Amino acid sequence: KIYKAAIIVSAANMIIVLIYSILRNTLGMSMVYNIMYAGINGILSGVVSMGMMLFWEYIFNILTPFKLLELSSPTNELMRKLITGAPGTYHHCLLVGNLAQEACSEIGANGLLARVGAYYHDIGKCEKPLFFSENQQHGNNPHDHLDPNVSVRIIKNHVSDGVYLANKYRLPREIIDFIKTHHGDALIQFFYYKEKSRGVEPDIKTYSYDGPKPTTIETSVVLLADGVEAAVKSLDTGNKEAIRAMIDKIVSSKIAAHQLDNSPLKMKDIDVIKKTFFRVLTGVYHERVQYPEQEKSINTTK
Image (tube, rainbow, N blue to C red; front, side, top):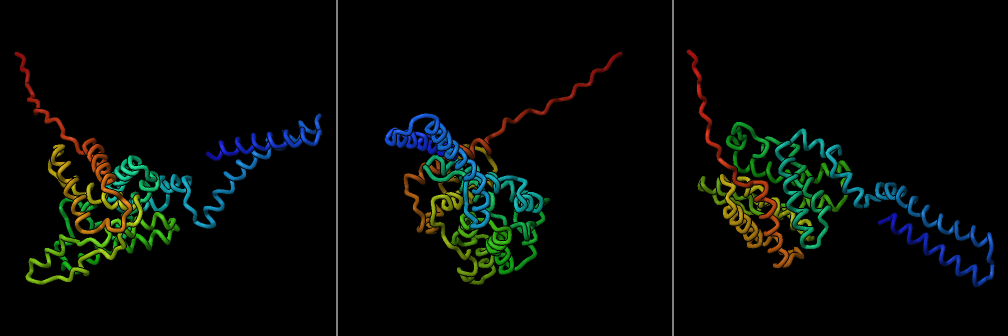
């Protein structure tokens, strides 16, 4: 776009100089030189703009497509921290990013912003990766030995830890918004009901995320994609109807819990988002063909 703008500016400069020369009756080689200089001026303006953009976006922490592409690279320092420290979370973030980008593109929102925001939404899990199921191995869950009050604080803190890391690594404000809002103020149901099963009436606020709720289309889509991906991954089957039912269930539960109250999403957008989630997830978690185990035949020779 910048190069196209430079060409248009260059052409406009040349036309204006030509008209001015004709009106002033300054034809000849001076006119040719002036037209040439005007054309070069437009092209150089584009080149200088490209070079200066990196400087200005760094000084003022402005989010541009160039910055988003840089942040999405696996070689980015904070992204490497996620890859090496919490590989299960990294894989989850990739899938959420794919879902969010496809859904946003379908409804006319910023797909690239949604994808990069999804990549960083769970960055706070790097601080205590083994306390999150996607990073646990061999069924070793440290929450089995903790009081629900302690567990819920650890789970909630991945949001504030993520904001801390994002500020430390100077992530743009727009990306930090994804970290803050990807759970809204939803109830952390597992530990809430675990505490309730002990005969205690838990405080709802203690067992809920601190918010805020998403206020943009992109952050709203990531909130939905985060919940849907985790739920569909937990299914024992890749059956399409089971996936569709789970998507409907999660999206409906988010709406019923008022997590999209501040969102600009419309119901027609949500219908498109659910269809897009279904298309992407059935490609990822499809049913596999069960291959019969081949019997080994032993040939004997006499």
